[in-house]
Image 1 (cartoon, one colour):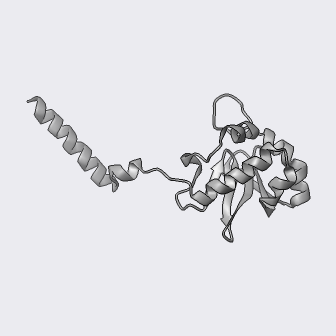
Image 2 (cartoon, helix red, strand yellow; image 1 turned 135 degrees about the vertical axis):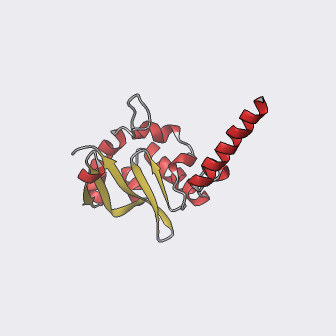
Image 3 (cartoon, rainbow, N blue to C red; image 1 turned 90 degrees about the vertical axis):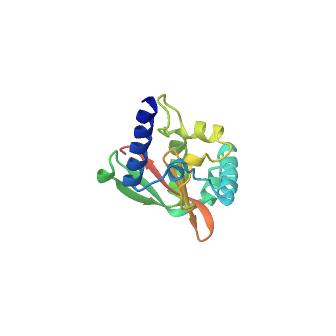
Length: 152
């Protein structure tokens, strides 16, 4: 009798998965960061840790997008150039990445992230996010392209 209940439970699980149109391997799949994304992150991280805003700017796409606002529907995108980026750089480093309950900074996240975590990388391999910082492949080169900030 006990086996009948287990068999029914397994059958229900299989039916639910089939109706959802997915299978267990897909649900468990992880997104690996590409080798070139990892290489870029190492170079970017070194520039940050050496306190080299100009070096970080060299790895940044301009115009650079600053997205402000708390909710997606209220977001305002502002394009800035290299000079403004360097001016705002200390503020960007001090922002909270929003990945933990306790407050932190992007600098702390960069210090503790020697490599990109799989959860940072998009499945298409052309973008990754570290906190609220966005990086993309542009003309076969990785670039820092956008940052999300709260209300400005």
